[in-house]
Length: 183
Image: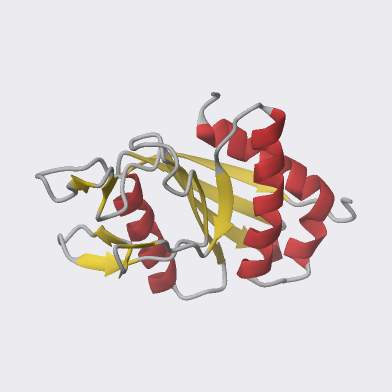
């Protein structure tokens, strides 16, 4: 399988070519993530990657408990990411979780962006100090996503800015222009 961030980039480019105008029309983040999920699943299928799903605001319950993460202060926090690409527990860790995506419009408060980035840092962190124990084949807390992507939609500048995270660290940035009239 190609690196998950490359699969995402190709899927986003296809999404932008077809539906970029919706970003300029200020549609909701939920709608953007829902539509983007379709393009990610098509890209996975095109590349022959099977057993993975792109789900919006997914939060699987495990033994009756909502999935959680451990943040930088080692505090347990329940999560619902905007969009994740995962196997829904069908593939054993560490290959279960591929991509975690948080989307935010540029005009949202700075603390919302900071919370999304903290979530991606936690979701892409490696298990440590026995905090994530594997009972029944799945950890109690979410971690180990191959890549986390923070997507900031900057409608006024006709661009989308991306920050990529791996192993709890920011690794790179990317800016993509939104061109009017794409379809």
